[in-house]
Image (cartoon, rainbow, N blue to C red; front, side, top):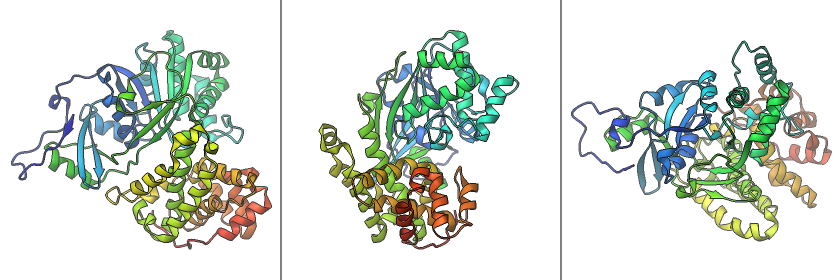
Length: 477
């Protein structure tokens, strides 16, 4: 349902609240469960499901992560929300109806009920990179405090897990007990080989609790890898007012996104899936080149702009990209990343790197999308492992310095000591490292991102030389 209403005057009466009485369609049955209800899920996976030709058969039950706010707001309007596609030429509005149930993530009993139902065949995840709790070996870090706490709760049977992994494992145990059959877990977080990451995290948590459950998951649950792409800034009060003025109803949960969207998937769906290809999703046998293109060129540039831009006094991606020093850093990083993408073979030709870079410049420059650098800057110690480290390692293996990738890490280090509010899963460790001085500080911070690189004196020297490139202006988040 697309809306292009432009009222001629302010309404004389109170506007109706967005609800399903405004739509001709009834609620679809729950077939998909999503963990991590937020703006990106609503602008991406929920939007793709709404656009699918068989959308009437595929309702989503979406669970929040840390707080119930999003679920409470959506529940007030029957799961409906407006996607505002914001282009240079203007805005367009679509009411998305694919979320048929919005729930607090802490409602583990309801999550287990839904996963125990044979009708549920797909679980999608946007739980953030840090939530998978993998160690340097790529396996679940069983020593992480929240993992330890959840395993104790699972073992005792006296409480509900608090992490997305623990909750999902408990719900999968319910599905096993109900003999509800196979399903697919689709990771939509910005991680390389994210299907493998999700598998290792979920099976690791299950195996630490119940080896039999881990074996059942391996035999009955597929883990689908994806590359997801749609810039989705935080919704503002102005956006809420805009939807009300343009559409003639009150929506407490609109989401703003750029017109561009991309979804590449690789893996099996043993019990079926929506026809997401109707909305432009692409299914491929080998996702790695697409993952790396997006992780390095888009997400890598975002991280670089987030740290360098804020150190230069900017607040949005568009502002930072307009800064010649920031743009030069991005272009340099893109040159390094491109040199290591797909090696110029068939996949390389399909990736169309020059066109992709040109499109990113246009997308990043869209000043009507206020993509805030502070939002992108969160969880840097995790993000840099996928966005900067692989390019730096590949460049040095090829006999080059990797200075552009190293500059991203250096800017994160400068930002970590300059930011008034620094949000990171390793914030305490970062703060402790920043009490050290000189090369030892660089080594300690780098060890939090990649211990192998931290042991390379040449890399430590390179990053130390690059620190201070963008200044160290304190930023208030």
